[in-house]
Length: 334
Image (cartoon, rainbow, N blue to C red; front, side, top):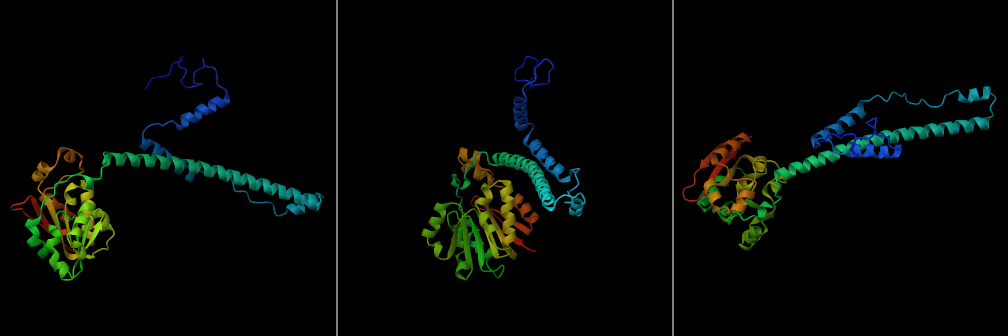
């Protein structure tokens, strides 16, 4: 930042004795520009606006509230031999003036408070925009990216046993659909009276599942898995099976997904994570997708740690034998 010298026409006005003072209206305009000029960081601006709000909430105006017209005003008017009509008109005029002054004072105080609140909201909105830009600078729809579709057929014989009969509840949630192997594997519980709720953010995958005949016995939902889980009641599902989304999401979203899965799974129910092997994942991703995705697969041991930390007890890592997908199974207990 440069220091304004005496010859700088854009320097601060009135600060140098060698400068001629500006007319009042021009100085007022410059002062307004100075007040609106961004100073410091967004955090400083927000903190300053909040400080002004707090000061307005605690400051003593130093003015006692107007107690109203004296009760003996009429008697004093009569003692002064002022006519009833004149005294009444004076009283009414005085009351109207005082009420108008009170309204103007209240409006000015409200305007100052509104200005500080508006500044605080403006700075807060700007800070949220900065955080959003940092969290997702590319603003990509992850579901639209070309991700590897690893088959989970290796776990088909085990899936039904993991979620069937764990608790006596009619619903199992599946997210995401992949190649449909999970839905095929869980056909037994569905046929036995247990409903499947299959959630996927990709329209083509949802439509393909319906065309393959899954729509007759499975409730297909086009949505992000975490978003749909938030709409489900606590402890309302016998189990949750997650694949795909657990690999591509960022860490915060992964934790939120696990929290929702634990919340909706009834005590005794199981959460099954079908997670891609990190090396196979990186080898299968096109470079642009690998660079732009918010997250990458976690190691199964990391998933075990997170599940136990978020309330799912004794997670077990089932290592993949032939395919690139591991299974981590945990039972929810409250």
